[in-house]
Image 1 (cartoon, helix red, strand yellow):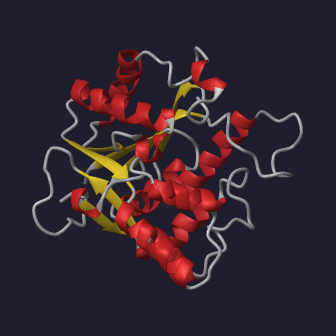
Image 2: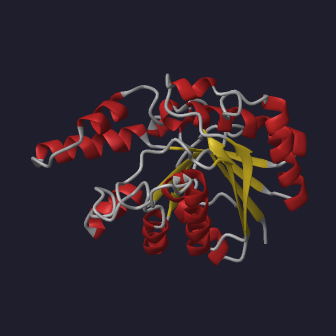
Length: 263
């Protein structure tokens, strides 16, 4: 059995980007460790979920531990940095934000976890952080360096399949289904995910979609019960979230996409 470490920027990122992969790995007997750079203090709250006066970061940490339990994680670690907010936000400049963190020091913290765990596989994000969020970009940089320091043998970039996402948006528009303008603009950006031709691994997580959906729902302060995602019919949810996409940067794609991060 192997040890998988998934490094994410904020609570709920783990459920959305790698929740199925984590659940499959745990079910197969692998050790699964979740590391988060921040507690997501700058997240936009769903009204009425977090009680007045409650610290959002502490609340989201509890949501993360609930999500991790659903997915079968064996350990959850927070590196202790503050959420940097979206690109261009004043919070980007906060001295305790992850975006402002010393890259080597942050990498050293993560490398210590990788070494202690004897990590066989580490997931981070692609070089532009999937969609350009400062903390996601920092996860890529810090995670890459940490793997070098710890000698972690396999590093994968979690990403989105840009071509598949655009096809889904176009299909929805043809069917007359309302599509959020912000979502359309995001998938049209060259900083959203990667083209299918660059993606080396496509992990089928349809067998654990119930766990992935439940893990997403555990983040109720961010993904409300009435959210677009949680109310997708089963078929549409499977189309949107049934495959998790990765790139192994040291082995460019040569043929069909691989299906297993451990093979």
